Length: 470
Image 1: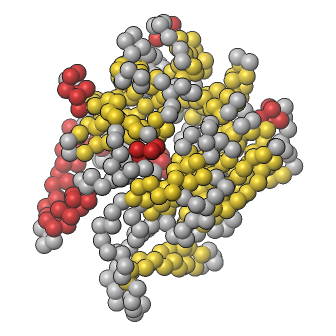
Image 2 (image 1 turned 90 degrees about the vertical axis):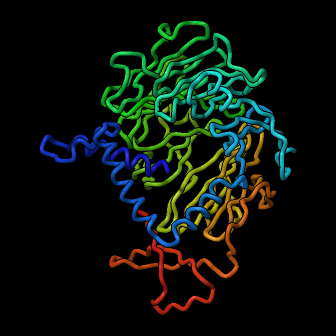
């Protein structure tokens, strides 16, 4: 999804920069303009007319609405402090409930949930059309969170400090007015804040270009500036990485959609990391992680695009380039992402567009690898339960014929505890999944899947619904 959003955003920015007065469709660049919105409504009306004329439209619509509105959804949770939090919407809670439970309760088919914040009630009390945009919680206690609330789902949001103990907004606490803001806790009484600070404080893309440090009980205007990006940048962002006894504060300057500058806070100074502009930065314990987007020659070795490499942070800052390869792509594999647990990294790898997992465990300064036994076909998603105190992680799995399931897994083991699963909305028994490869003129093997009846005759006469991406 992130790649798709970036792609659409880039296409929009590119078309805007290339548009001229002679472009007959230039008015479409004003995406909220009355003429553009009227055109969209016209296209929607034409589409509705054609779809609603189909003989099976009503039946298909009702079936899909039953599935989409079904209460049989997985309530995904995030561990904050000692509780497990979920944001839930249904027909009785249109704006949603932020609620929590224990892991013991969550294992039950019908857990008992404690409501933390009722957005429908809040919207009614405050006469605002609040839409939930998430929570950023202070670590390690998790007692305070910064809630992001949008009016009607707009990009710009209001940020307000919330106390999880009292389940109330903090009187006189941190608060930001409506803007495209981002915040990060430095500590209980200090924030890194990126927001609209007034004239010339935004990039040409409309995002904050200034990072400031804001102390509790002081006006935002008195916050001290840490870094100013350029107006031509995309945005700037501060982040804090905590893991066991290690902590790294960073500021990332998004120079373009695909390139960044990263600065690390050391003894009160912000030190720029000497990395490739298109490489992503991460940390694990006292190690620096770099995910490469292009080939990089350093330390007498060339690391290929798509690699995940690691080195001790202190070695890197001293100019050493003695990297360890945690993942190197092959002709058929690519790293989709990785998640940190207490003692390991769990890598999600695409192998001929099939998901699989591998672990990388750090012990006594050495990395070891282990393949995780996972289903052959399907999509896998990993989320750490508590990356500071646990090696457990949530594993979400789905494929073309298997309803999505949520399991509790642990590094070092292939045994997984089923927690939740969607019901089957159709009988998949008559069908099967097969993978084949189309070979291009240059010899490249392009994988594709066929989902069809087990007794399907491959005679070229079967009606086929074709999906493609890439």
